Length: 199
Length: 199
Image (tube, rainbow over all chains, first blue to last red):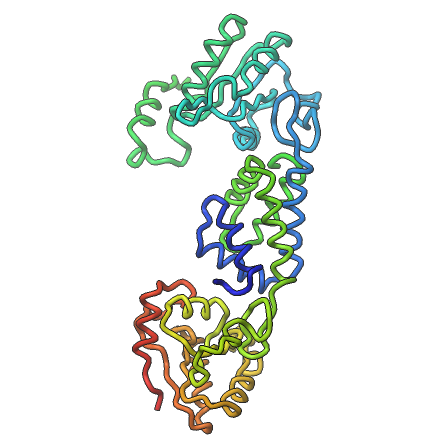
């Protein structure tokens, strides 16, 4: 359809990626044909290496190139603080904020009965074990502020209550740079409920 | 930044593609890590084969897997009609309209003095030669309806006038400033049907 079978094949492969349809895939394919050879080769090599050279940290279950990962091996970080996130991408977001110097625990998703994701599919027992065996003094539940993330946070809070370790939940409120006029009602309500005293 | 060096490398490679920024590249990388191994491998192989197994047809200069290409070798097509387009993607758009059963001629771009694209950079002499040596009874100028495409059509009309072969221009069923590659089939079909003779 696009030209050579090799072009059609790349279009089909690209279409399997999220957010890339027929037109984008065709456009990318023609772009790669016009671009220097090196670009397609570089992309292909990056793809081949991606899974081969990426592994799960046996401590925090984040993705990295070694286990324990760089953050788990970093002696300067605070062992007594554990931040629980759903996915590696969430860990990246928290780390990019520069406000957290503790350890992470990546669950590998959120509870979602519709998608068949139960507690056994997440690394919750591993978290429990980690909390029981260590000197953790606070667990920050940083699952996403949506239905699944809330359910997951509640479930983990219930499971970890017997350990006696204090649990916290990331704050809800207005995003910085946001506009009250365009914010959804729930966010505005939460930012009012969670208002803080100005000293 | 994202996790392993292999992940960072793929993010950097993906960012070199048009329309893919840091966030899309990171999202695609995490998606590929979660997806079955086979997807990344399939993509990598498609990329490696793309240029290796795609070549230029020596007759129409379209991209394909052989020369002469499938369309040039097709005995059922009308030799007396030649449709001149800028890029292989434009040929795809015309063919997808299902309204053209002649031959194609891919220029390899449009005249654009600003980008240093002169007549010598396009396959215009090859077109002239093709017209002079064959039994062509109509040349459809299907360059894009924008500044460069118009200039290219005018220039070719001037160059081919001495051959005496009737020239037509695709009709403006399309909005000015548009691109054939992204037009819908019906619009492309209309613009073929309404083509006008160039005096």
